[in-house]
Length: 138
Image: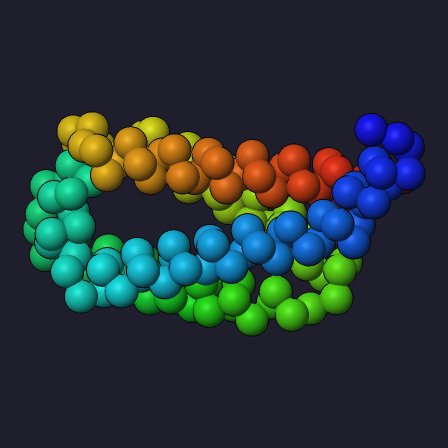
């Protein structure tokens, strides 16, 4: 690959375009999870290996509302200019990494959905990190 080709696929503009795509996928993921958490928290608790209780259901519903709001904001911010999108990418990188760490420390059994959430969180965190690093190339 030539230096000119590398410049075309790296830098702020290219990274921001790709972060917009990651934000769209992540927003869809958060919106779907938010709906499930809001409407079937007891089932979701079982799917991720948690013991169900009224307190767990209430907490998962609150998380569902937060994920719906975050997913909506992620969807909307995709339309922002390049530098704000990079800023949101940095915030989402940290959030994805923290959600991944919390998934590891979640009490209860390791279920297929828990493994999937762990993998998805790690992939999102690494995608944001890689794209943010690529935006710094000149």
